[in-house]
Amino acid sequence: MTDRLPHEKGFHVSWDQIHRDSRALAWRLDGLGPEGEAGEKGGGWRAVVAITRGGMAPAMIVARELDIRAVDTISVKSYDHQDRSEARVIKAPDNDLMGDGTGILVIDDLVDSGKTLELVRTLFPKAHFATVYAKPQGRPMVDTYVTEVSQDTWIFFPWDMALQYAPPYRGRD
Image 1 (cartoon, rainbow, N blue to C red):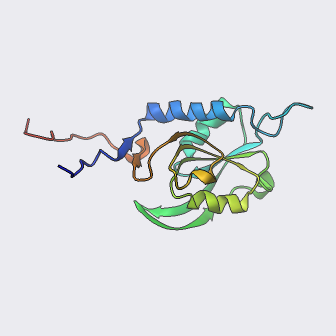
Image 2 (cartoon, rainbow, N blue to C red; image 1 turned 60 degrees about the vertical axis):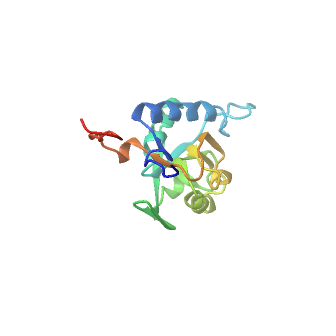
Image 3 (cartoon, helix red, strand yellow; image 1 turned 90 degrees about the horizontal axis):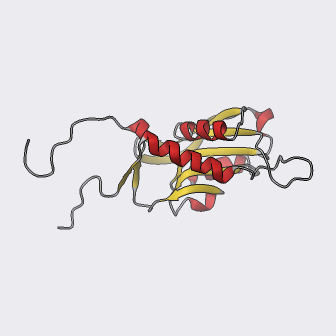
């Protein structure tokens, strides 16, 4: 049998898992910022910018873990449900905060094709780009990530899911 069940190339992420993985991302980012103490290499970050909507939960967790108080968002639309489209900015972060991106952490849940991060990177070339999950095609756009998944895996995030009854694979109750 070569047909796959719908869940076989899916990676289901629970709220607990996204929290643990976002904390792991924070640990990897700790001390990498350019704003260290006098003479100290590396340090803190000036701000976190979440790529909406998927990056908001990880950005909140990273900001908390790294004690970053300045948090903003950039809204990039590159999907219509599960269909990709041309990436475009529909809400930009504060210009005074961003500058060229130096000292800014840009956070998203996932880099897939890399088109969203490529667009944001052109706007803020010196920002540090971090995602919780990365697929091979988009990985070159990310400076830091936690987990890599195959390009053909669809990640099901908890904010996209609802609990419901699933019939058994074989037979009936």
